[in-house]
Image 1: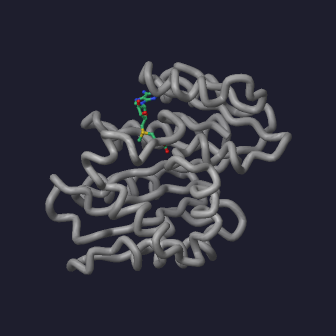
Image 2 (image 1 turned 180 degrees about the vertical axis):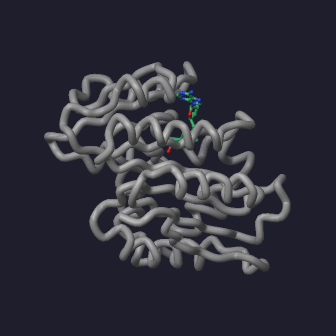
Length: 236
Ligand SMILES: C[S@@+](CC[C@H](N)C(=O)[O-])C[C@H]1O[C@@H](n2cnc3c(N)ncnc32)[C@H](O)[C@@H]1O
């Protein structure tokens, strides 16, 4: 598994930054308070791992002995925290390496099968374009891999453009899982988020709707335009 923007590994919700914003209470806090059955596997992992786990900690907990996790993280402090977390772990490699460059250098994986997760911070104005180019690059080097990219929904235009480009890209078997908290009219707010999944794993398409519905039920705002949907962007 290649985690291109791995972060620090896990986050202390009791520490000052998390306490200051308190955002987690409206998110993971609500899910843990009343766990929906569709999210049981994920929430059990969150409780087992302890601190609020980021993608590398969740993936590490699910690796089989023959699996490997490659993490890239550029920020020096986050990289150091991630390295310390996995020090001496022969199944995990932590690189201080640019995510977009890593997609070319680290793919395809030796095992021939695997998952690529692209979870950038969306701080750069062209991040949607970079994600599209990154998915294309990853797919070119590793056509049978499962490629996943997260995106925020602030306003609709960049999301529609990303979906259209993916549909027209020639890549096959692409889904978008979208959670909208409200109509994406105010671009200054996080109005929802989505996940692009290329070559979705077995049963993902059947199981994702229940997960999206459970997320909407617990995290929904009851504002106009909220909703959850699984959209097929390209046929198999
Ligand atoms: C949204 S966070 C990732 C969160 C992580 N996937 C998780 O679940 O905890 C994005 C991370 O990407 C890192 N980053 C930003 N640009 C990068 C780049 N070009 N290459 C590698 N890491 C980058 C940031 O330092 C930040 O830690």
